[in-house]
Every structure is written in C-alpha cells, then in structure tokens.
Length: 494
Image (cartoon, rainbow, N blue to C red):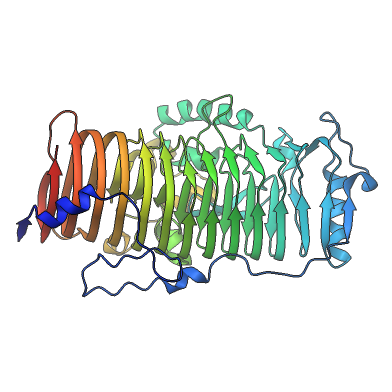
C-alpha cells in the first residue's frame, strides 16, 4: 500500500529550524517516531571508558631510557622500555621532551598514559620490518598482519593523550597498494589484493577495555587510522585524523569500531580517503563463525571532511551492527552522511541506527543504503590458473562459501535519520533492498532540508517513511520509487 501525503504539519516542520529535541538526560529524542514504536536510548549513558586511578606524580621520561629526539634515530626500544617501566611501577605517565622521535611498533601497557604533548611528533618508521606480525582481524577476516604504530592489546586501563602528533608517513604503503592493485586486477584478483598488500595501521586497540584516546593528531596512516577490535568501554575524544596529505591513501579509514561495544566517539575531526567513522562486525563465513557484534556506539560532535561516510555501517556486517546513536555532526565533502553497505554473502543485521542534528555540505548522498555493495571487491572467485595450486591460508578463508546461501543475506532495519540541513549535495538518497523478499525494513527520514543536484531512488523497501522533507533539486527530478510497500511520503519539492 502506498500513501502520499503532503500535510500542513509537514509544512510547519519544514519552516522550523533544523535542531533535535532533547530528552531530560541530554540524549536526543526520537519521539517523532510512531507512537507504537518504543525508542529506548538509555544505553547511551553507559558508553566510553570508565574512570581509572592514575598515579599523577609517577612520570617516566623517554629520554631517561635512551630515546633521542632526532628524526634520523630509531628510538623504538627506548620508548618501549619506558612504557614497560611505567606499567611495572603500577602505572603513570610516559612523557617526551619536545622534538621528533622515530619509532616502529609500540605496545602500551596497563596503567600507562602515553602523553604526546604539543611540540612532540612521533614519526613512524617506513620499514615494515619494524612492525612485528601477529594474528589480528583485517577488513573482516582473521589473519596475520603487521602491528600498528601504537598498539593496546589485552590491556585494561590505558590511554594515549596530548596535543602532539603521530605522523605515520604511510605514503610508502599507499604507493605499494596502487602498484599491486594494477597487477592484481589484470589477474582477476581484485577481491584479494587488499589482504595481500600488508600495510601498517595507525593505532590498534584489541581485546581491551577502559582505553582512552584523547586530543592528539594522527596523520598519513598506511592503512586504517584507528581500529578498536574486540574491545569494550573505550573513549575517542578530541582527535584530529588527517590522511589526505601528500597522496591518495587507499583504505585510510579514520576510525573503525570492529566487533566492539560501549564505545564513545566525540569531538573528532576526520579527513581521509575511505570511511570516516566506520562500524564493522566481520566478513562472510569467517565473520559469521566468530559472530561478535558491534553495538552500543555513540558518535557526537564530530566533523567528517573528505571520506566515504560520516557514519558508515559495513560492509563487514556478519556479526551484526546495532544500537548506534549519532548526533550533533557535520560533513563537508564526504561521500555520504549516513551509509549502510553489505553484500549478499556477508549476512548479519544492521538495526537500531539513530542519527540526528546533522549539517552537511557537498556530500554525494545524504542517505545511502546498499545490500549489494561493490561486487568486484565483495565476492571472491579463484581464477582458473590458480585452481589445483597451493594458495595462502587467507585466500582459502575468503573463498569459503556461506552455507546455506540464505545465511549470507544481510538485513537492514529500524534506521532513523532526522533533522538534517544539507546543501550542494550530489544526490539526496540512494536506498535499495535486493528484491521483494529482501527489503530495507522500517526506515524513517524526518525533518530534512536538502539542496541537491538529483533526487535519487528508493526501491525494494517496506514501511519506508519520508516525513517533513523539503527538497530543492537542481535538475527538477523527483525521487524514483520502485517496488516499495507501506510507503509514506510527506515531501515538499521547491
């Protein structure tokens, strides 16, 4: 059934300012959703790192352990000795004199605050041999991969803070990838090049809790900027991430929250070449086997600049992504304001996604949802010349089929986007399910004021509501609606 309504109530909404109402505890209210749908966001008060005791007077300066503030001298061992001594003493703060310190992989320990103050720059070694390999998860599958520049692994209560800079100098890895990509595409191996081309992440937080990352600048990461993996109660606050310096960095996501829970991201400014803030939960058969969700995530007061998505869910959706709240956000030149993406062998459910109070300029889409994203990357097929030959273990993982096939079908439902002011967008919306049996279910778009070149498409949805939306479309097109059931429109075209 299709309902088309343009009411005086909608016109009233359109004339109002774009701002969210707030509940008494400061969490944005989604009371505009149908009365029959009870929205409980009380969980949003229990995210982020819990306070932990620190020895304020316990300070360990890396110079005392032999570190040299000379960009030509590798100080990895000296800095690591400082971190270890600080942790062994019961915790405290590791400090640096002003200057440039070259380092390979460092491992932060319990009770340690690695304080990179203003005037201090950590320069990552360009030599991949300075990053020991171990088993981790990369782009949705578990495999052996180099350490990050800074690593927090199997740790409770640790932090990295300060107004200084971590310069990962990752262009050497960007160039390596683009060269491999050319060769792999010739061999019909696009689906595996991202995994064969080992690159260095900026920061890895893995299997840890009560970790705080605060105030520093992270730049030019060789691969993902910050990955929070299999962790809980972490806070990322006041970070500046800039991966668009000196080249076109592939896979330079800003922040990736990967099968983790109770995470707070606030006050961050991210400029990158891939997803700005991305929520992930495993890929295909490997992700379905591990089956760990990303859930209870709050993103607030953040700015996305260049990049693929202010908030992106997927494409690694296998373990489920749910209970995500984003508010008071800005996007400038970002591909999408809210992006949901998966593939037909990922599986998993993306649900209970809430985003409100957003200002966007020059984005490609205000809302994008695609169950069959980027097929050349998303589906693995072994070329004939490699059959009956020995192949790497992670190739075998990627080629493992999902059985039964229906287990690989992803589901997107209960997604709410409200109170958005968007100017100079390329397109308002691109939201499509797969077919009549696999639809986007229960989406609501409310109180949006959008200026865009094109209107876009909504297809294969159930109970999709567009209410109180004002569209000024340069090419005079209107939204194309196809194969939708229980569709509600309250749209004013100008």
